[in-house]
Amino acid sequence: MAIEILPSLLAADFGNLAADVLRAEASGADRLHLDVMDAHFVPNLSFGPDVVALARKVAPDFWRHVHLMMTRPDLYLEKFRDAGAQTIQIHVEADVDVHRELKRIEAMGVKSALALNPETPAEAVFPYLKETREILVMTVHPGYGGQKFIPECLPKIAAIRKRAPEIDLMVDGGVNGETAILAAEAGANQFVAGSYLFKQPDMKAAVAAMRRDLARCP
Ligand code: DX5
Ligand code: ZN
Image (cartoon, rainbow, N blue to C red; front, side, top):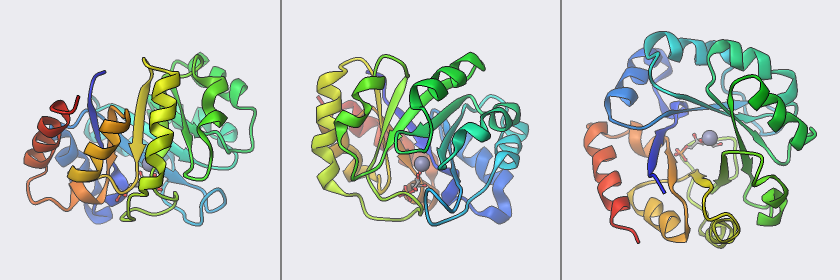
């Protein structure tokens, strides 16, 4: 499976967002992860389509992977597509018909992806494994950056990997050089990292080190 590293813009300096989008792109990371929070699905607000559009403007070739932590993502899909989202990830716990919304995302010409919260069992995503491109296992309770990786989520990664050997399997929350290895050993191949990467004085070196260490995982 191809290894991917995605810096999460949530950990950027919001006073210098454009510069931090460029910094993430120049780090050699694969794609940009953009966390949208609605203060309902999670107890926090982050940003909306305008920030996705800003990322497109300053770094048009840096893939925009948009993680919608929203109770009703269905009401905003077109807005995020129009702002430049290239992958739209919804949650299996959202208050929507997941089969229908994954289809709508793909029909819009956007790649679909599905996320699940720490307390949600692996089985919840089994019905969708043939309908979407990526599954994201949250390894913190969503809502805030800078939290600690929950190791109890590792068996869930392994269960999904066993069921879907070919699917892209992403982890998000508390990912750093060490926890990324634990997730990779469980079967993850895509890694979102916010605070760990943005706090690095040399993000490029950190991404390269992470990639090198992950490549050594069996
Ligand atoms: C959490 C978000 C994450 C977050 C990760 O609700 O979905 O993408 O930005 O941040 P770190 O890497 O700091 O845990
Ligand atoms: Zn995220």
